[in-house]
Length: 313
Image: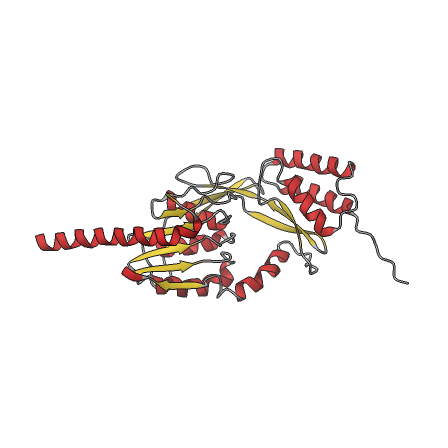
């Protein structure tokens, strides 16, 4: 006769508390959260919960102190590998394969305005460099560019720098990351050279956002906005600026814990909790049409100015 072992939340909670204490970027908050989880466990809040329900309950508790949306306990229906970070990579590989490498749309609208949709994620650069380079090279010939991040839930900061490298003319300091491990700060810069052609740093650029835009997608919008390179059109974003790591704490559960925080070199802060505030606020559903209208108007002014200069020479 087969004996079914009842799921025990206690060992999962103990391991999450340990990981928080050792790795969370804000040690003081980590202590508060560790105490909260212990109190909730002792009070019976997790008693009888199976893995999927425990993930929901613990995520709500983890985000209850400072609202950090990168703090979570994630349930995976399929058993996940124990290696750190492997669960997320395994779960997003299908998304990569079914989204043309994270570039599901490249389209030319009228007046020479291109749309480049990046979704559902900014995938790890070792996967995404080839499709992104091809798409960005194709879009480089446009007179103006709209980058659609409305359906993007985040991803790899290195991929952010890669994309920015195609949208700027020279090597530029984009962002810095403070890492709790070693209490060190690491700078992120655009690349001095790219494969293929650059769209460059002078033609009109618009970024579309929604209240679903998150994490690394927010960084892409925020970096370019702070540099004065792009106008953000749409809704304010979700507000997650802390890079995270994932640890498997049960065959079907992975805890996500931020291990650093972003520091923009211009603003001296980031978008955590506040989201990226659009330069042109509008409903996400209207953002593409609004940006296209703005781009055409901008190009008309530029063409008029160019024609005037030519007639005077």
